[in-house]
Length: 241
Image (tube, rainbow, N blue to C red):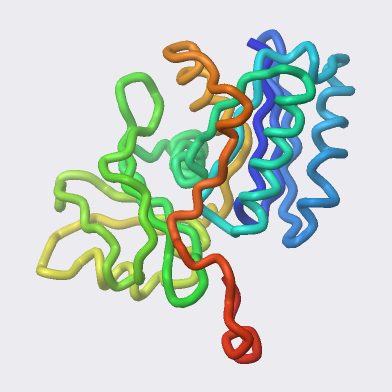
């Protein structure tokens, strides 16, 4: 498999290349620099592998949720490269990628990935490790107030790992919400805020082997939240999306 993966949905700008069994990874925490960094990073990993985009089988990308601008950058880059080189694409949830990273980094099996969604909300998911070694969603990713995050049904049966920029921003609120109604949930906060493109490679490789790629036109961002712009008053008040 010759597969390129990228993610710019958060403060991390992340690129990974799977090429005939080898992996090259470039992962940088670089807020608001993705538009400048992404294409040179892609070119660099391709050059290190001694290959080019026209020799790839396809491109996988973090489709969101996350920063509206960041998600658009990844989708636009994927679509542009895929159209130009006649490649297939595969969107991967950025929350799923974060959860898969918790498996790789910490051996987690039950994961609650979160991103700070601004405006007092979080993007949230509920994932468990499947028999294939891949995380699987128990429910659809959502955007909500941290006080209303979904509580897993497994109660005290498993340790749930809470991670991501949402967990870092709203740790106390999320812990309180996940223990509401006297549910005895074992929680551990992992200091792992950003998704990594190498985990998109892991998820995408299995998905492509099952169902193949999608056409380039389907390289679309996932926002979850309908509101994509602030009013003048909200901008003046310092709010951010």
